[in-house]
Figure (cartoon, rainbow, N blue to C red):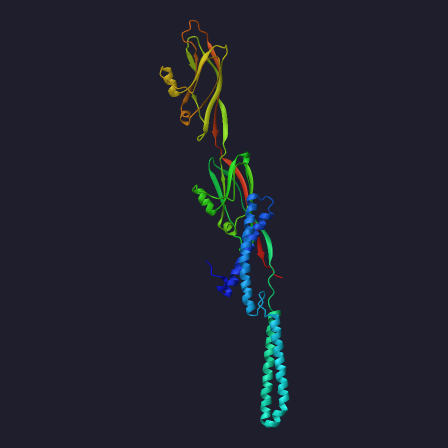
Length: 415
């Protein structure tokens, strides 16, 4: 805890007052930037109110310190604002000094005659001493007056300060982000100490309207995000195809580096013809099947499925099976099996089944079977089949983004 300001030295008081003044300027700079931003949201407006509260507390502390400085300087007879000698006290001192000189001079003149008469030869020496004293007093008055003139008129004029708006583009990139992965850029700028109203802004857009996620973090929160710990972002948006952002970091955060992270979570539903054609079952056959069907899709795909329709052209009833290779062999040999799809006692079917990644590595059998295998009179069956395979794939995406920073810098223009 700090000691009471009454115990501080004069230098400590002045240094603290200057430090608090700098804090007020920086906090007010951030607050003004938020208030002037037309796109500021409610969270940023709340932040502006918090900054106002900070300014009030810091301002009150600085006023207490200035009052203590004023009290000490008044006790010493010095003004707070400019280190000048108090006008009234100084004027009184000079007038009193001049009056003393003139009184002494008149007293010397009155006594001069008496001294010559009474002292005789010693009167001449005494007059010389008196004149020397007068000269010394006159020189003292002149030195006081010259000191006053120096303090009043020869002080250097305070420097004129000016705030200059600055802006710089930090990055402009076009890049490809692989499926289910992240890409990031570190952007930074060494901003001078005498700066305020620091703002970072930019745009991000994906080609072909592919969705992406975006985060803007400082260095500390980037490390937290990497380790999947709780973090706080300047800006964060998910599942967008384009985005514009603005946020207000501190000068130290920009100098240290800001992390712009873009994540590719784009996915596409794909569908292709799997098998299309007529599948006949002759009078001699109990069943028939297409050649083994494969399910080839890009690596890393998910959500695989098949769907289709089968219809007997003369409206005869039949049984339809969709089997993977292992269950097809069990079905052929009369052992218990598990079909991906099985429909019985109808002449038209609409079927659908999901496919696991393991199953997709093998082959499939689409089987048309007679409803009754022991009919005395058989007709040929003809089943028209239209089937499709579908899957979800995760494409690479192309992103273009640009990031800039702006600030106001304090300068002292030369005249």
